[in-house]
Image (cartoon, rainbow, N blue to C red; front, side, top):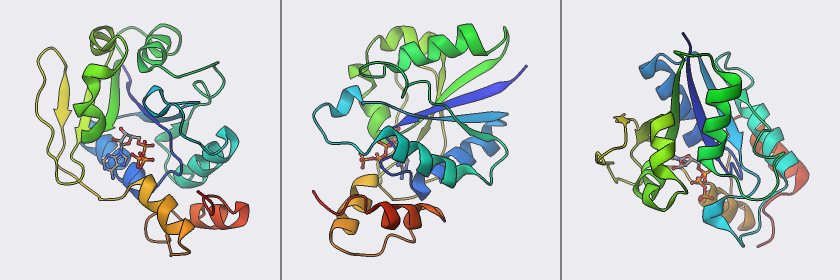
Length: 193
Ligand code: ATP
């Protein structure tokens, strides 16, 4: 029986906060695998410019290379249109996992608080147990009918802050994993609004 967590996001770019919560989830919940899932286009961020899937994927690969339990999947990137978590979770349950395997979904407080707006949340909640982290000082609370494990670990970093700092010519080395800052500099990502 495997314990697998899906970790969806825009990862534009992946940062130390992402890697930190994945690592804490893995250790505290005894996960065999954490699957990073860069989305093609977030249903929550329609209309916002996004770096290419290839760049976001490359940065995730650089960030997780040293962790044996971490993998990245192009499944959402290769699908047309917006990525819906319920479709991804249903695919994992049906096509990837075996019966009896446990499936989790990792997220931060901002997304946990917005779950009511996610498509088919009731169905998704039957497929996964959420692993939830605080963010920006906000501590997640239980929601009826949705299984959640609440972990206390926090690291205050956001991709928005990284993009803003890069645009302003400020250092981001402390906020992104090794290799990712170099990639951003080399590709000149986030230099313009
Ligand atoms: P942006 O600033 O562009 O909105 P982001 O930093 O929130 O980006 P995403 O890729 O959108 O990054 O986040 C993917 C998932 O990771 C979401 O569930 C989000 O809540 C969670 N997450 C991101 N950063 C943190 C953090 N520092 N602490 C806890 N959860 C986080």
